[in-house]
Amino acid sequence: MRIGILITHIRAEEKLLISAFQARGIEPDIILDRDLNFDVTAGRGQLAPSGVAWGDYDIVMERSVSTSRGLYALAILNSWGIATINRYDTASICADKLRTTIALAQAGVPQPQTRVAFDTDSAMQAINDLGYPAVLKPVTGSWGRLLARVNDSDSAEAIIEHRQTLGDYNHHTFYVQSYINKPGRDIRAFVVGDRTICAIYRTSPHWITNTARGGQASNCPVTPELNDLCMRAAQAVGGGILAIDVLEDADGQLLINEINHTMEFRNSSAPTGVDIPNEIVSHALSMIEVTA
Image (tube, rainbow, N blue to C red):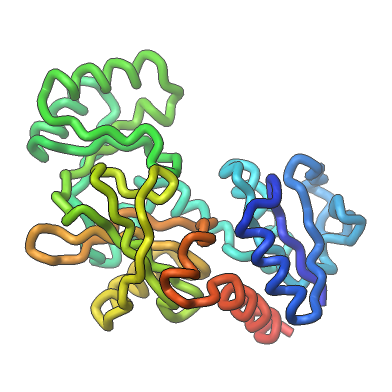
């Protein structure tokens, strides 16, 4: 059995995954994305940076910090018939907030009301249609970066002008969501395969509750309602190993906010009591058994 883990650098999560594989008697190959040099036309027989032919890997786990490197690597490997976690089809949807919104809408999964515009005037109209406050997000990005809550037209005009002038083409797509007045927290749920293995509350006095921005993690019980919602969301984007961000509105309804395909989890095992890396490794090995 041969496992590859594609990384930008070894973070706490990758250390935990490596240890979980080693506990099963498996020494995974660590493949640095900066060392990749694909001959796209040559196929799976060429050597990976590890010195192993790509086609000899039973599965490759993509854990790149760089979204573009990870996505292109998955696209190439999947085109060669190499199993990956996650698959390109899933990762490419999750990496794009607009594509995630479309997938959830097609599946009838509840989410905040969302509008998209491509011009400054139409973006202002989209915000007015939703009402203030509203949330402006880049269509790509993570860790709560470049999110903006706009409380009035003056702040909306300023942010839109800045993005139109300074941003690249991604920032010229104006993705606007209705602001959900959540109760000082949101939920991050972890889906591995066919079940929601655990979830945390992320609590913060700031409206952005990401743990990367200082949110405090505590255990969130996985109720049948939460599990059902998360599984529907996961299936909408193709399934796999996913972190699903869930909002609670003022009426207690659960709404899907975002879905992450290379999630961080180092702060979540302790409050939930769930060995997340071991669950991920078990799923990876079960995928290999199914395809063997």
